[in-house]
Length: 318
Image (cartoon, rainbow, N blue to C red; front, top):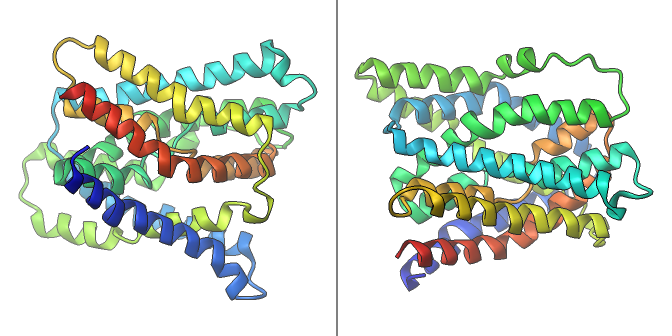
């Protein structure tokens, strides 16, 4: 990795990410009497219903869309399915899952397969690839992670959890405001209309999305209970090692040179566990504590493994 890129990655990405996550962890101790669950819920609703749709609209409207871009969601989608399948195999067909309840197995599966492709991916890939890299996380999220999370992910949570939900997967997905924001942005993009001031205003309005969700990530990590367990190591091995390894293998099997979108797809597959896993665990009665534990360890470990995978990807591409 070039020295200049390493410095930018440290100062522009990893340091701000770490500070925002740490702020979320410190805030409840500093502000005594605060309800972590209530604060987390209000921030999540604010981001989901306003800030994120604005940011997704701006990303969809301004992105340069081409067929090569589809490598990002295709590689990420394949890696996600692989991670979920491998976790299911380990938990239901080997001694690793013996003695574990279905809510615990469901939490491990979701934490092993779904990564923080937007809130980690956006600052990371923007630093690595410059302004063009900002489009990759949005297409990865909208065309791979979000559809899989709200279909297969919800199905796993529904089958493994203890709840009284009656899930309609398609209805839940179509009710997500960021989905409509992204669709509207793509419509503007493909229409050829010159709406640069509106796009810039939406980008500015949506800019708090990433910092707020990283703050929520810090709120969610169980800092007082970060004790490693066997389940944590299984999830980390799948999420941070085997998933990007599969994505790398698929990318190398793709005809031609390792393209920039393919590199982005590999790095997206290496992202740590996403925050939304906790929301699904809460909603469907999975093991929320274990899901938070895996998310915490994967986030901390991801600060080291992501630069490693970047070195690997850049070495293969050169």
